[in-house]
Amino acid sequence: MERKKTGGVFSCQELKKAISDGVIKGRVPVDEGQIQPASIDLRLGAKAYRLVSSFLPENQDVVEKLHRPDVYGSDLVMYEMDIGGDGGILEKGSVYLIPLLEELDLPKTAGGKANPKSTTGRLDIFTRVITDRNPRFDEIPPGYGGGLFLEVMPRSFTVKVREGLSLVQLRLRNGEPSIGDAGLKRLNKEVRLLYDGKEPLSNERVRIANGIFMSVDLKGDGPMGIIGYKSKRNSHVIDLTKRNYYNIEDFWEPIYRNNKGTLILEPEEFYILASKEKIRIPSACAAEMLPYEAGSGELRTHYAGFFDPGFGYGKDGEVKGTKAVLEVRAHDVPFMISHGQTFCKLFFEKMREVPEKVYGPRIGSSYQYQTITLSKQFKNG
Image 1 (tube, rainbow, N blue to C red):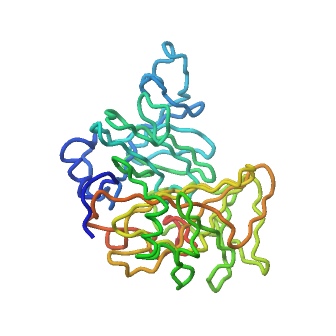
Image 2: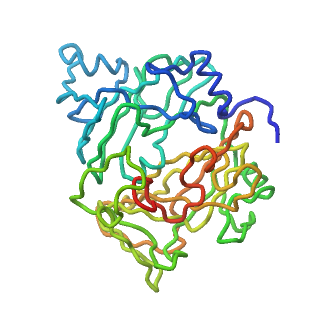
Image 3: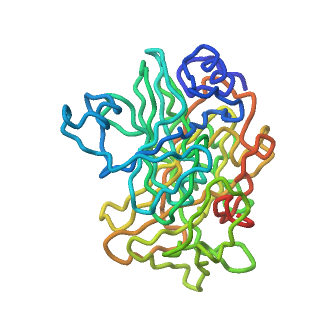
């Protein structure tokens, strides 16, 4: 389906043009492997700053805020470290700021939104992009020109990173990209955005209200009865450059289903669970998953957030949905959840044009056929 270029998310071919036009540029040349169907991977620079705390620059430049405490009254930096070469260690529970290799020179008609990559979220690494003179995280205003900085706080594991590694992705967009409820109902009728097992869900069975609601799976469909994992305390360092390397049992405790379809979440523990429904992102759309909060504060779900065109769909609809991995933490008190309980909401955005490539194994995507899947650093993960 061809789409007239109006408002929406930039496709991979538009991102390539943005690079050639100098809208996106790198202190090290941007590699084509960074370009995803509707986003671009942002790379860590060679230095990391250990901070006293998080911050936002408001009406200041980030570098000035870091290096001129005499002027701005913000002695934020504890020390700096080199993460080039063999890389460096980011300690669990500590806050770091890392200048990224990419810079932007956006036109006044286009802004950006950053999200953690899937692997980043599954390792419970909290990340946010910061830009000069901006009071918001992850939102890059239209017309922004300048550097990009990444705040990083590993929450469950101490990790090793190095220059060039990608923890976040950026999408560019203009106009009003979001798809409203009427558009979602039409889209679901045409292509079925959610599946329950092998069964596509009609509009009567999909909860649509400023997005599509999804629920948690506490029954599972695997022979081992594993419905999720809980991170272990006091684990070793995880080198983020490794693939299929670490034993799951050294870092995670498996969670098995029970006959009640319930799970009690312990306060401040980190859990990996899966959605009950399988989602499909057609090639003319992208989607962002945001947490659903009960309002009482006991439960906060935290997601990598962004789904490229073709996730759970393929190029021509040959994939019949893929489960979303849910990253979950309870607060304050133990909190019981049940199978099928509402957990998140999926917002859909239209693409400015259909991307030349879509999410899937052909472009190196790791999670197209996932069920309850840990990050790719783990064996069989």
